[in-house]
Structures are given as C-alpha cells and as structure tokens.
Length: 352
Ligand code: DOR
Ligand code: ZN
Image 1 (cartoon, rainbow, N blue to C red):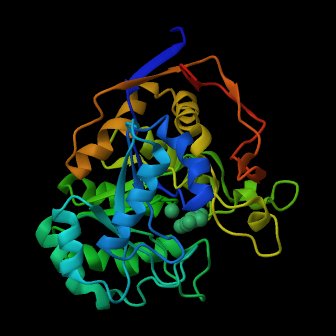
Image 2 (image 1 turned 90 degrees about the vertical axis):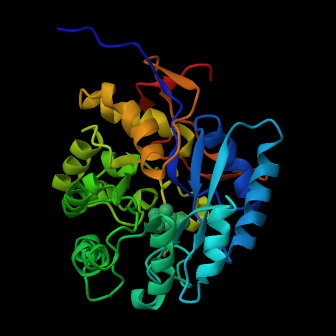
Image 3 (image 1 turned 180 degrees about the vertical axis):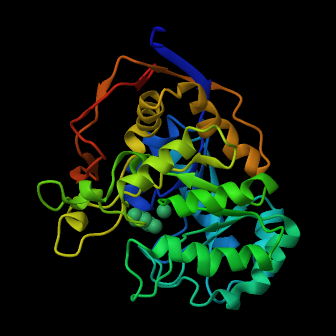
C-alpha cells in the first residue's frame, strides 16, 4: 500500500463563484476567502443588484477598501443581467477590465433574483454582443416554472434553455454554475471539449445529498439553490470534479446569511463554506483517491477557461486536520454559521 501524502502543495486556488455581500458582512467574510484564494468571481446579487459597469466599479472599490492596500487577492467583477441590460455598457466594462463576465439569473430562481431575466429572448442582443467580444455568460441553471418539481429544475433547464442557447450562440462562452445533477455533468462533457461550456462545482454538493437536508429533522443550514439532489447525482459530481477534465472547476457558491435568516419559518438559500473552502475540496479529493487532480480543479482549469494565467504562487495543505470554526461574528455579534461547524476535517492550510 502506498503511503498517504501528509502535505500537498498546489498553485494558489481561485473561486469561480463566490458571494461576499456588502457592508459589515463583506468585511467579516472576505478575509476568510482572501487568505486562501488568488482570485474570485464576485456574484452581483446584492440589494439592489450590481447591474452596470458603474455599479461594479463601486462594488469593486468597496471590496478593495475592505481588503486593505497590500492584499494580493483580486476580485473579478460580474454584472447582473436584467431584461434591460445595455450591450454597450457591458462591452465597455469588459474592454476596460472592470467586468469579467455577466451573470444570468432566471427571474425569481434564487436569492435576490427578482430583477433577473424574465425571458431569455429579451437578452439575445446582449448575448450576441458577448459572443462577439468573447465575454463569458455565467448561468444559474434552473427553470423557475412552479409546476416543475424543485428537484427537476436543473435537468429541465438543460433541455429547455441551455441546449437551445448552445444552438443559437455557437461560440458564446458559458459557465453553468454550481451543477448538481448527472444531466448537468453530461451536457458539460458534451460541449466542454469545444471550449464553450464549463461548470463550477461546489464543495457542499460534493458532500451532501437531499436526504442530508432532512437527517433527524429539517436542517436549514443545508438548504441552498440549486437544492442538493439524490445520491446518484452527488456521486456523478464527485466523479466529474475529480476526473481532471478541464471543463470542471472550483466554485464554492459560498453564500453567507445571518443565522436568523436561515433558522426561521422561511429560511434563505445559501451555504457558507468560505471559512474552509479548499480543505473541504481536499477532503473529497482525498476520499476519492484523487489528490493529484485537486490542483487542476482548484487552480488550473478555471483560469484556462477564462483565458487567464494560473496564480504565480502556491499554498500548502497539511494532513494535520482541524475542527471547523464556530459562528462568525459580524459587527460584534454571532452571525453566520459555517458549513460543518464543529466537525473535523482532515486537512488544513499550512501557515494558518
Ligand atoms: O443557495 C444559494 N444562495 N444559491 C444561490 O443561487 C444564491 C445564493 C445566495 O445569494 O444566497
Ligand atoms: Zn451563487
């Protein structure tokens, strides 16, 4: 039997899907991601949403102020697409290096998506422009039709929205965000090799299935969107993430909500994984005997899709383990509960 590695050094990872919010919440959660990551795609679903280049510049300035002057972490900004998005504004933001991508939320699909796109045909002119200039489209891949079962919304989206979009926009670069199903895995495998479709996979969707949400009682901290699916889908995601295939990469979808907004009669969707993001993925890759594929997934495949260089520096993970921290304070009071709080993880980042 080969000996288990005790240390693992990889290029510094990036997070290609991250919610850091604004104000006091931003100042509390951002340092946890910044110490691990080189870059992150910053989600624009604030209240009100970050819909224009100008708003993205203001949000980026707020993030940079919270980081302080010597921070190495780089926020990659996105604009929130609405029915009224102006193609000229998006193009200007992309060319000026303010915007990296545009995020499409189908209207009312998830947290703060009321201003999202009501009908995809309305944004065809924007998609034409993005295709022409090589700007990626990031999609929340769920249909919002209430007659479609919540566990089927991604698979139906793949057939009713994504396939027709791939036909209509043959060279538009699309990231299907936080895939949760074997149908999602399959379409990404089909179109990944042509370089126009990729997917992010969260740590929590690699670790929990839909039964975990109801294990011993209802567990609001495991509720997120897209909701966790059956075990067979979790296993398909684990195979995809650990395959080394370049069209799958790290995107935590870490989404902090105040505990009171989670533990209530109608709790918000979102799982907060930023505190131990890379360690959660390391645990999964280790369990799958695929630690040698972690660097590709976490640090190489994302930049390759986005046409960027990998980060120049490295991080080292150690098998010394850690207990996931307790609640995070925001403005001096207990506020956000990390995923797996109080539980043991096998890995920790060296130098912490
Ligand atoms: O669980 C989720 N939380 N899914 C999303 O799509 C949005 C996110 C949030 O912003 O809280
Ligand atoms: Zn998200």
